[in-house]
Length: 428
Ligand SMILES: *Cc1c(COP(=O)(O)O)cnc(C)c1O
Image 1 (cartoon, rainbow, N blue to C red):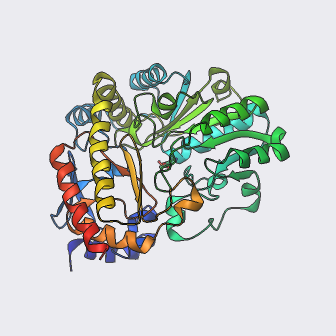
Image 2: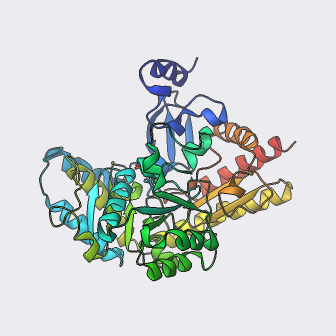
């Protein structure tokens, strides 16, 4: 028995399913999870001492690679001054100012502790600002696990084969309307019926929780237009895409200005941080300035702010970072495409910037319905072979592969080598 297996057995006695977040349990790939001991640069090591090239990067935050010196040093320095004060600090101001400078649509921002909390709060603000209740979300988009967002919610939920969650009152879900990703007509239909009641449209500008699904030309523009015509707010959930597709996120990448934006993952540099921000007139609704209540004992935590600020500063000051990262990712994903073509495998590879995903289906994947045509059993075989050969990817068909700045040609080439072996083996 490996040490991971021993820990998993013990964990299941004390933690539901042995894990603190469902996808980590490796359920959908029929394996038991690897317990992790440490990560450094592009590599992650499990408790049995096996090293892998890390394409999860804590599900996105570790865009610089793990244990980056600049982030690490700032965190240690902050720790020396005390772990938490529950009071205002200088770092919070620096962090807020930096994000407002980097992302043009953000005029004010509030820090929270997770992406879930950021979305939940942004929705409350949108409702408070518009005086309306309904929210439009898209099938297969994940916005954290708050009640009203657990409808057709992608990855974890999708992987488990559970359409919704128990414990969500019907009343919460009735104000959540769902439309099809890349399907403007389905959004227009909702607005014909409910237009005056819709507070906000929330979307992942690149969907990265049903695998990776790109917005088609005109789709995000169309949403902006519908929102403007109906005095509805447009919320970009950039918990994954923020500071991933570029320093100004997906909104900069696609040139669309949302009214509110949520962040998470990368902005914490590996610490638990989320944030929501946007137009000044909307954000002025938030307490203590306005009537929308939102609070947090550990929000803006000094250690977390130090980590996030250090990471964002690194990304900002290194002007060629994204170009180099995306070039590396392109080499990897194009290489994978080439191999799939050569081996004549029924698979689709979607990618943009340093986010990518292979779907085992011959259909182009452009929404939730087409994502679901993927052969998850085939994915399981693929995952197992990749993992056993040192490539650490998400244990689910419906998650993204994250390329980090710590990867070099060496890691890209090694990954392509294992990928080719894997594809050959599973397509026999
Ligand atoms: C991860 C994620 C969330 C939730 O963030 P947590 O920090 O896990 O609560 C919300 N939205 C998107 C797009 C995400 O990828």
